[in-house]
Image 1 (cartoon, helix red, strand yellow):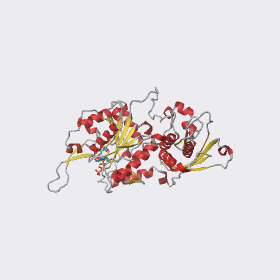
Image 2 (spheres, rainbow, N blue to C red):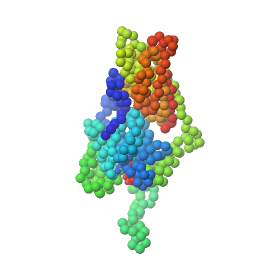
Image 3 (cartoon, rainbow, N blue to C red):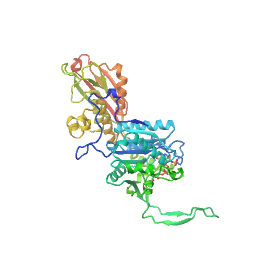
Length: 458
Ligand SMILES: Nc1ccn([C@@H]2O[C@H](COP(=O)(O)OP(=O)(O)OP(=O)(O)O)[C@@H](O)[C@H]2O)c(=O)n1
Ligand SMILES: C[C@](O)(CO)[C@H](O)COP(=O)(O)O
């Protein structure tokens, strides 16, 4: 199992005031939430019926692997997710490709993402996902109060509303929940054996369709039921496990009620070439380029200034996500990381989402976002990237220029770029200059950072 999480800086680089807890306060009481939410995406299937000669989750859909579309649709929900587990194909190339997609999502969305390899059938892949989740920390969760959703990577276009419905139904008291749509075709059962002379299948009966439902994913369960379910099927022979085409079947076999919530026409399972073409069409119809309009990038600008603290009030210097030993720090409510803050401002500006003050000002953090109290510049940048993603924007790149007499950026430019790029989930380029002795930067009273960002609609 490997992990990427919202904590982007190596431990030594995390702000001295401690990492902010990303746990959610209860909206009503402000108490920490004990009910947890996790999502397991099973993406280990071979995709034989699709026939692309590679695991289905790796197959290209509109320029990105199928798995990326699942994650892209989760950004609005991501603040409420405590963990995402991706169950990936066993071969190294596919594993590397898809885990990179997952890592990018984890950084942008601020969600801990864990990876494991799947098994030879769907149930064994789901089991691997549950085991990964437990060893990633869910073993300490309250199992009756925590909800786990299982999603097929193959249902790449499932809208976020369906996830929200399933979470809501489990949290309202159902131990097992499936999303489903009424069946619109007439359904007939055929005889097990074809006609002896013609070889054609023979209809045995017509099944009344009013009570039939076509079941989709994500399927939701309490963590407690999911653990019991895998203990329940633990000793079954492989053939019987193969026959379990979804997890709700195990709950049914255990005598647990399974609730149904509305699914979505968009949540089609990409199984055949025709399904992939349908998903492609759906994707195009939901993107502006289909209407003949080009998808233009957006640019933003950000600017931040901080004064150096006076010698009588020493502070550590944090700049561009790095700790600078033996240097007097900057004043400010925050850690004073003007380079990271300018990047955040450029992102908000590009997305038309206001500025740093709106999202991370002392008032906001004091009221709506207490978990960001004491957050470092790099952590704020990761959070800004998550906010953009939730608003439907990806980040192309950020360029930031530092103006000041000290510290000297050259020797640590690469290191700083790496830290900020990891935080933003996109390339961040840093340049630095002095101001020829002029102005407050020239006199060494403070520093200035100016950033530009290019973003694009997802
Ligand atoms: N051993 C398996 C089999 C399936 N799955 C996942 O379960 C979902 C539903 O499976 P399906 O659509 O049947 O995918 P494949 O098994 O890849 O398809 P095929 O049967 O055509 O090979 C997919 O997201 C798939 O990646 C999995 O994680 N591990
Ligand atoms: C879980 C599922 O998507 C619900 O419809 C379906 O059962 C998966 O079946 P598959 O044969 O593994 O594709």
